[in-house]
Length: 180
Length: 193
Image (cartoon, one colour):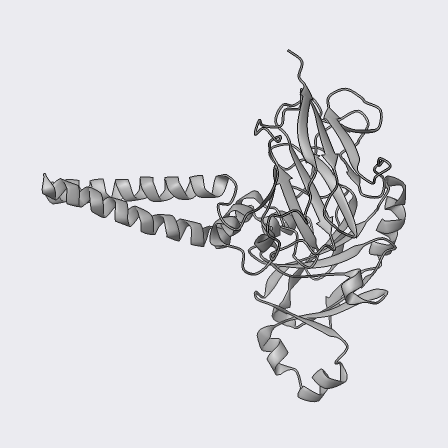
């Protein structure tokens, strides 16, 4: 009897380990996360406008229909990226997501404080390899470090009223994301 | 023989308990780091690198990209102020004010995070287009039939959820549930019987 209880106890303990392993491994194994969903729709290292969300056809869940959204799916293995996003009249933001969907950095137009949000995206190794003086002369440029070599940049611009959406999409269409 | 049977029991039990509980933990609302204001719940840490493992697994599964903390914060409501689930066949009134933010939007989604089809292509409101009362507060009627004022169609389905997104806001990780962060009330006004 005791022996069976021990087997069951071992099963429960092992179950706890399986639970932790499953939760921790799922983000890197998930085949339907945001990056994978966008992989079929967007090229790498280029800005792609996403279609306006509509019932039943949103590429990602919980997209805000009041926003024009563009994405730049990136791969830094060939070198850092330069991102420039012209800000719109109302509200513009740039959010960075790792391969597994972690929002590791986001900035809005007001925090950026200029009419074009300009950022350099690189891995921490590439940042460390930057010549020191170059880092200094470019003190005013924002450097963002990506925790993973691949990921997604999401550019969002608000159309406060539906009639403003075409103008907002036009401004966002001038955003660039390319190898520096 | 007994060893084999015991090992079999142990491993079966481990797989069932481990995977079952993991599935349960990530299919519902993430259990940690909640900011609850009335019927509205946000997970401000989901917009940072410090997202907890359960929430991380949940977003990897759903495919959503959480609002980054430098962008804003997203509040979810699945039920009204009495705790009853939001029902698209009923008429529900969202009423009050939001915490300070440069802009905010309110949007209606089905349980899968997709917009709900309706005849007027109205999926939500922005803070700029909403019609306000004299004191700056607003009332939104969510329901299947057109209403004067701010009408948000609930479509034909039953369960839905509402998202309020605050953009460029002080509300975030450091916010405690309190009087300084008012969120609108959610009241059911009537259901067809």
